[in-house]
Length: 291
Image 1 (cartoon, rainbow, N blue to C red):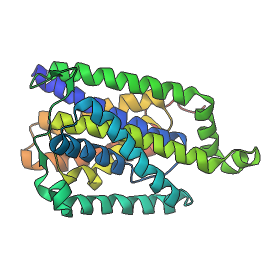
Image 2 (image 1 turned 45 degrees about the horizontal axis):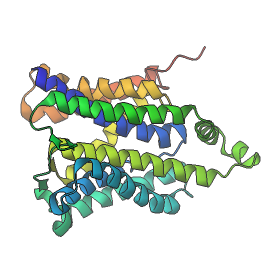
Image 3 (image 1 turned 45 degrees about the vertical axis):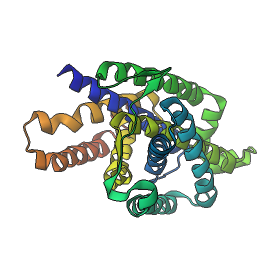
């Protein structure tokens, strides 16, 4: 049982990094991007392909996944960041659907629905963490803590305050001479790079990868974490990721739902929580109420 809890906590750590990367672009900069899961998936596939075909190890793949996802995001941002609001959301959602189709049909690269097997487990300085969940958890906890500390400092920095200003009032930011396009682009690139790191961590932990990583359910889960935690709320998103991924996702299993109904039951729990939050705590359940 203890191994099960450590495994669940490790997955929650990965989703915490993904959620905080999305919180940077959506929560802080106000980019209503429904395709953020693309960068998570690209990082995961980059790590899987580089490891199984070219022998790159875990640490190398963390850096390369960040580089590849960030590079893709730069081109993606140049094409889409002129759009605003719902237009940006629709365009990025379409891009996420295209990514899943490509992953399903580019058999030579991704092996399509068969997925990529045989990904090495994490390895640090020659030490391979095989089988034991506690070493995995400690390793991923160290990586997550480092990245979250970096993001926390970024959220509190002058650049973070600039992103909040752009989110709240673009015209005011333009009026004081700020280059809002460059700020948005860098926010997207940095958030994509962090999502790519999380994707590499996910691929090496699960040791198997298939196109379901781009599925609509993954997009909804990511949005749910940020909405529940509160847009721009740093610690709220950390708590939200552990609440949703570490607790609520497994609640139907503990209530003895049949295996065939677990997915549907999770979606019902997620939908109910989202509806309740929109009614009673629209700023997120971990945000303070306005007086």
